[in-house]
Length: 91
Image (tube, rainbow, N blue to C red; front, side):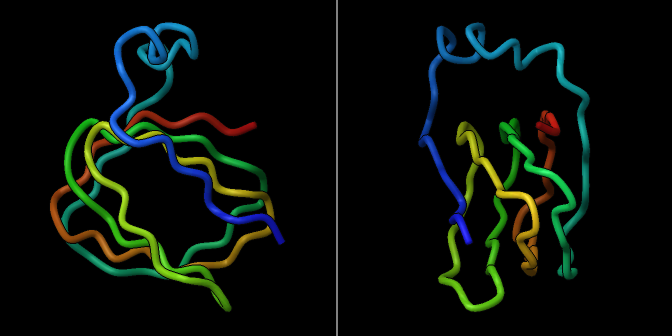
C-alpha cells in the first residue's frame, strides 16, 4: 500500500497552484481516533498538529503549513496534539 506523502511548509505559490483556498475546511480539537480512507485525500494544515500512524506503518507528524496526501484504503489512527484546522480535498 502507498504511504502518506508530505510536502513540508508549502508556500503561497504552491497553494495557489492547487487552489487550496477553495477547498472545504475541517476542524477538530485534541483527540485520538481510528480512520479509514475510502478514497485518496489531500489536505493542507492551516493550524495545529497531528500524528498519523498507519496500520503496519510508521507514525508521521503533520504540522501547520504542511500538505499531506493519504492513499485510498489506508487505515490509521489520528492523534491530534494541537487543535487542528485544515483544508481538504478528496481525489
